[in-house]
Length: 104
Image 1 (cartoon, rainbow, N blue to C red):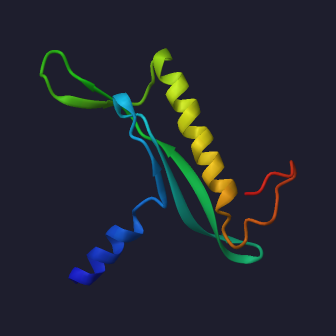
Image 2: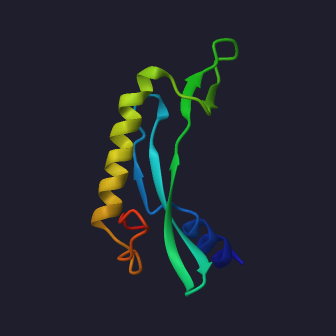
């Protein structure tokens, strides 16, 4: 079963990570397999890494699901890099576009 857990660990890794930047802010790009009317296909999803901070009382590092205004430029930069990566590394069936003409 060691091979099974090793393969599931590698299956749970993002395709691309951008960051982390100061405060732990970053973006991960994931490939997911979904069922569609046309059959199974791969799509991408994006997750934002939580902001990291040190709890002043306990001294422990913690994650926050919210961001501070000073994080906005970093978030924009990371999301622009994610967009650039997705547009320059299309998946096989991402040549199609949604109604707005943007590849998905």
